[in-house]
Image (cartoon, rainbow, N blue to C red):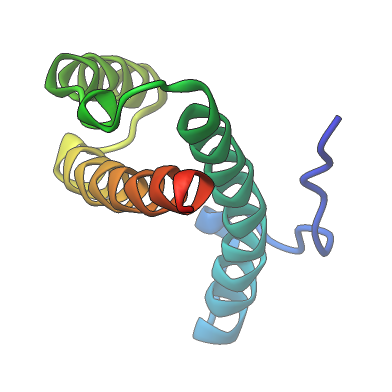
Length: 109
């Protein structure tokens, strides 16, 4: 199982009194996000390995399904859809590009 621990949290957002405290927490969160996004990348590698046709790498219905689920989760957790949707659309697009490259690399002769 993947561990997402980081430096210990020192402040809650509403308790920060200066920008050094804010920056510490943002940097801490970014290190955790990198680990989580790397885990997502691992599944792009699995998808590239499993999919038998390059034509199924991009699946627009799946993209929209993921966005719907993300927006639902964002709403439940107080994340602005103005942040969630564009961040996930960019990440999904980059993951698709990565998967195309991985698919090609696995099958090159």
